[in-house]
Amino acid sequence: MKSFLNVQDIGDLRQALAEAQEIKANRYKYETLGKNKTLLMVFFNNSLRTRLSTQKAALNLGMNVIVLDVNAGAWKLETERGVIMDGDKSEHLLEAIPVMGSYCDVIGIRSFAGLTNREYDYAETVYNQFVQYSGKPVFAMETATVHPLQAFADLITIEENRKTALPKVVLTWAPHPRSLPQAVPNSFAQWMLAADVDFVITHPEGYELDPAFTAGATIEYDQKKAFEGADFIYAKNWSCPGVTNPADYGKILHDYHQMMHWTVDSEHMSWTNNAHFMHCLPVRRNMIVTDDVIEDPTSLVIPEAANREISATVVLKRILQSL
Ligand code: AN0
Ligand code: CP
Image 1: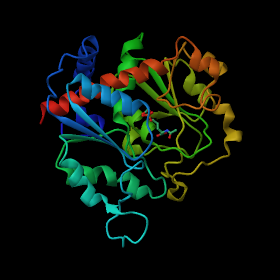
Image 2: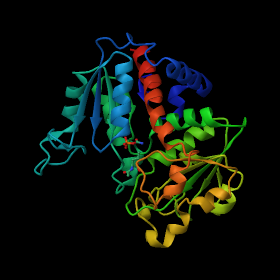
Image 3: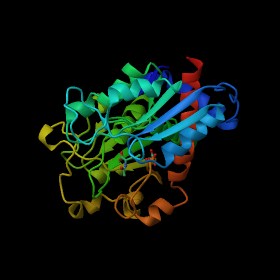
């Protein structure tokens, strides 16, 4: 595997889930695979889970790890080609990438959507420059449009907790005071559509996700109807994807005070089939979800985060095996 961005990159999902189970039973099974191989993790944005779980995964495989926080000590990087660099940016990504590539064997990238230029974000411009100019395998640790390590961990968690062959999984939009990317819901939709689940998305009008990720999904604008019979409720906020109106890309369409009826509370959960609550974290309590719902024993937010180590170990193992 030379690039990990989309669900197709991992191939057969049942095989990937079987590997995840194998790793979970013995996470050090491939502890010599990464000997003398170096992972470089490049962060353009904050992280708690991705930073720790991906580093742990690399250690499970015997790799060496270097972590670079671009905004905390590196030169400020220009990412667009053709600009006259007379501002605060001292170095161009086009030199920085091959330099970074020369010190490592595998590169993980966290580079969120800027949410101002839809075309730039949806072309995965920064990620693709790493693919093109690093000379090394690259994987997404949440890029402009996707967060596949999260979606894979979510799928593992659903597989571990499902009670039926075809569980109903509902992705619900929830309110948030700041403008957030679409990467998590995009990947979640893409992975759920490739998995053996009945998948429904619910959100207020105007928040339609890009059909490149959601084609084939059921969209239900009535949140209550969507929740009925659900086995898993996956909450997430996202800003306007700009599908129907490109000028609204990255915007919050309504003041969040007016949208608090979308917050997942115990009444929402009472509409479901005793569903498990899920969220990728970090989560704002009593915006996205109430204290009692996230603290309920059936909530899966901590197991999901723990499974990030498993999804990252499988992905890094695949990459190491293809070096
Ligand atoms: C990010 C997002 O919504 O994409 C990261 C989630 C894993 N969340 C925030 O910035 C709060
Ligand atoms: N879920 C997730 O990716 O969390 P971090 O942003 O803390 O890495």
